[in-house]
Image (cartoon, rainbow, N blue to C red; front, side, top):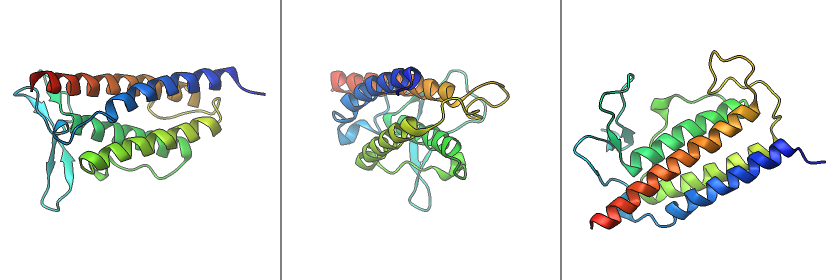
Length: 170
């Protein structure tokens, strides 16, 4: 017997994932590091040849406009961490999550989509969830799944808007 909550979360996730894929499949190599404004957050190569993101522990004012590279790093970070918590794996630190590069980032996003779909089909929706709900008692894996859907929808829309703005300005 199916769980109507899981069915609803999966339906919503698949809709969100389809929007995300719409933009992922249309990304061009130069889209990732395009800076749409003078104040941007992006990724930079460090001295070891790894892509690392711009970051501030306190949100700056004004908030920098992220590049697609930064957004895909951010998705990779929050989603990997969410999966770590949800699946009981050791939780990686933000500084341990590096952007893999343009086409590799698209592959990474698709792999995370698959991993989350599999997790969502199997997790106990009623089990307590600590992430991203630190300090909020009563939150469950169902709450986390709804948050993933909302966060992914927001990030997919941001990537799509940046992609379309770059295409329109060319």
